[in-house]
Length: 224
Ligand code: SAH
Image (cartoon, rainbow, N blue to C red):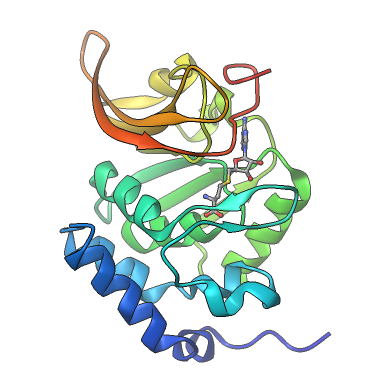
């Protein structure tokens, strides 16, 4: 096995395509939050895909990862992150860590990220990648994320990177009042709309952010 490259060396690779990606997010997709743009400009996305796909890591599309899952399109990652409105004191729950890319982006912006991935091998690999990048304020565990992660609740933000039939109740319960939950919701497994739930004293308010396509959220409060 070849030795793991140092984080700084990884950041030096693909610098130009990464800068182009950030410009596209800002100028074409209208991502405005400079902290979000800085975060995606820092994380070496190519490190999260297989070697054969590295050259395409900064393109305007999702890419396959192992176990038939996908790493979301850069725009979707940036949009969902922006909608969470995080700051350096935020505690974040992420469901569907996949490759760990979104986890690494969230870790640039928050105090602590708790990430869940239902496929054990993906969770282990994602966790290892995050550590190799020198990120210690994020952790990835394998279980059904539709149940949330009560031990670390309440959260300022919750990001679900897989599409479910409804907003899972345990996730609302684990959100702070004033907290934000971003999730793709759809009546079929194949297509969804991106929604944001804002927790209020008495329940939550839903906002819609247009159509999107995610892999299914599978679990007790997702698809069976
Ligand atoms: N954000 C990821 C991509 C997510 S793909 C990245 O940056 O790479 C969606 C992931 O959600 C898949 O890996 C899938 O296994 C996972 N998933 C689906 N249902 C889940 C559940 N109930 N709990 C945790 N993870 C789940």
